[in-house]
Length: 259
Image (cartoon, rainbow, N blue to C red):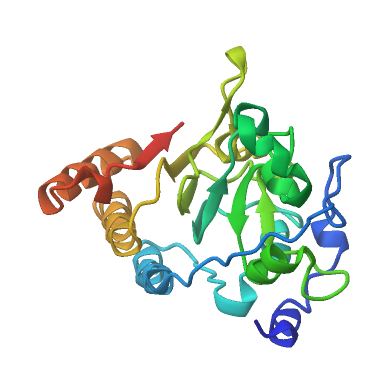
């Protein structure tokens, strides 16, 4: 990671623009050594590059952030200075950790586990990985002082204003998972984006392969925007095409549409 490049790409985003409205802060959370890395997803860049002309053809102004510019700061700035975008598409890694109280024998490892994995709060145990996230995952701290760590939790998303957003697409792994808490439904990224105000969510229930994810997303957008279908109809049509193209359901059936 080039920390200088990340800081430069986000120099015009001030702390005031991304200030959380909530009472919890995870900037200095006790994030012990996490270990491991999030692998590079080569098809994510191809995916967003393919989607941009589809959006522009439909008369939608597209703003793309990738590489060093795809930071947690840039995401939290969305909707901070006005209306949120109609469409919000994220192609990256997602994570969900189950309730540590149900893991049993793993409780003995609490002292060496990250706050994102061992928190009692389900909105902390799910999130998205953005630029710089690998460094924080390995070291427990951000690339530079006064920067976010690149690990965007569901709680932080829930504090945003996405009331003008018609569709959020989470082209990432396991983004539809979360804890079921009585009649309150699923707590996780699904709950976070609904609290923030988004109308429709496309997310996954398991780790869908990188290339098939890209194919699914470009097909969906073409049906929705070029084919003038409703979002539910475009989603169902895409599922049918993927069923015919990829025999193994693992390659496409993980995606769900939530309203």
